[in-house]
Image (cartoon, rainbow, N blue to C red; front, side, top):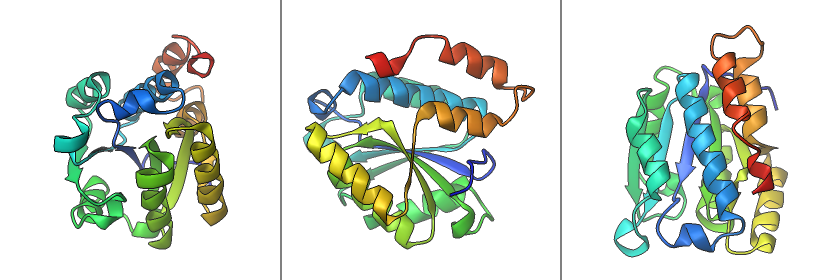
Length: 198
């Protein structure tokens, strides 16, 4: 799998909603890492797609995630869905096309964060792979209710062809060089603390 290119990337944040967020394995890690990914997307002008699974039943997106999404000045898209996998919603494919107009499907690099690993995230990732997208799955921004569910879902997605990565690798691949105009801001973000210790 090639390195990430910010000009080909889309960040997809899946269903970080309601009480479910606090029920997953290591919720503080997932939330902090996702907030960082969204801030990184802003720095590198990477479009962000935020989804919610049946919010009437599960609740709205966790407040700190929604606040960052609302404040983004880069391209951003929202999808409320009932299908578990994002690709099961007829509106998702067109959103990806709007996020990267003119870019062929096989050239899109989808960076994924969200919950739950073994349901909505996994169905989304497997269907993205089946439609020739390149998928980069941030293990530190993906979780589920129980470490076993998370681990085996990550294993299955990796076996299907997803690249298992983390938010720091994403940042440094988008930058590629310390002389990138955004790198000082990236460096400052990374010095805010180590979310993997949460």
